Image 1 (tube, rainbow, N blue to C red):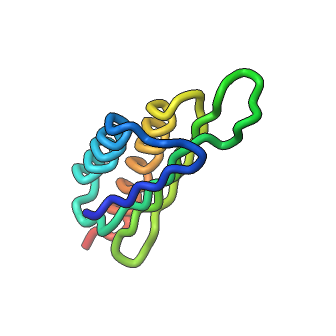
Image 2 (image 1 turned 30 degrees about the vertical axis):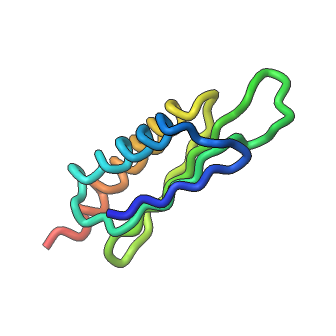
Image 3 (image 1 turned 45 degrees about the vertical axis):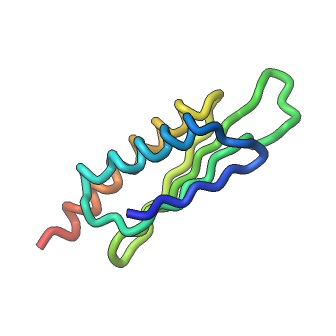
Length: 100
C-alpha cells in the first residue's frame, strides 16, 4: 500500500510521519487489499484563542471504492486515532459486503 502524506498549515516532525504510517499500515489486518492511502493532516485555523485544532483526513482506495474519514481534536495523535477507528469500522463493513 502506498501512503501519501500532506501537511496543511504545519510542518510534520519525523515522529508524526512514523505515527501516521503506523496507524494507516495497521489497517491492513482488517482488509489486506488497500491500494493507496491519501492522508492530510494539519492545523485547521491559526486564530484559535485556546490552542490549535488538528485535523486528520484519510481517503483509502480499495477495489471499486474510496473509504473516507476525518477528525478534529486538540492534537494530531488523537485525530489519527479517531480516523483509524472510523476507517477500521468502515473496512470491516466493506469486507463483509464484498466477501465472495
